[in-house]
Image (cartoon, rainbow, N blue to C red; front, side, top):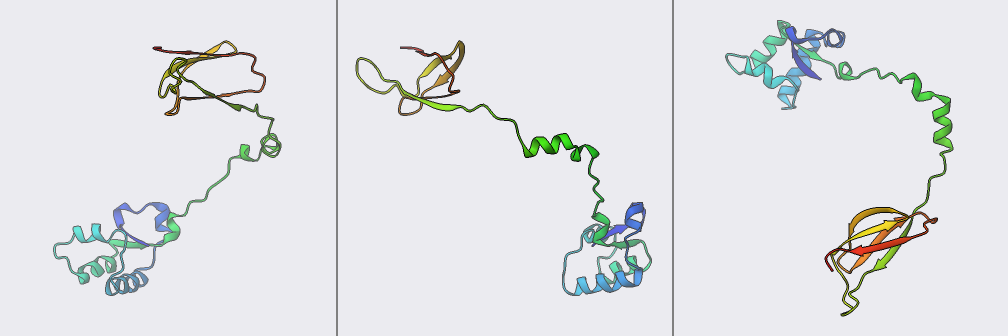
Amino acid sequence: MRLVNERDLSESERQHVWSSEQALDLVCQALLDRQPIEGLAELRAGLLIDLDSEVLHQIEREEWWLVRAEADYIEWTMPERAFDPKMIELMQNPPAQPSRSPRVFRLIDSVTGEPLAQRHYIATVDGDTSARRTDGEGIAHLFTSAEVQQISMKIIGV
């Protein structure tokens, strides 16, 4: 529930307001129990004297209304296309996805035998090139399909 100024009430909120008598009882109890009420700070900000009795007076004079929580519920309608039989069939039987298998290479210096950690290289997989970098152990990870014919690597700066 929340308090709304009379001038700010929307048409849907007007359909979900408590009567002034019920609102007085609910707000009075919330004030006694020190329960938070949304909109109460805005109501108090407009008062000359910030007293609970003045808050209740605003509700009694119907300048502020207590709106039920139901006013915030929205009737969601599903678009017609969400139930398209073709989409449901695709979701139940998705097409086969191409698989990619990991290829792991450890790149080492041919003279010292040390791993080439954090080194940039260019990988060419069946003619497609991409710039990459090895990890901290000199490992190069490539994810390719099983049908790959040729892989080559050129280390940059060696």
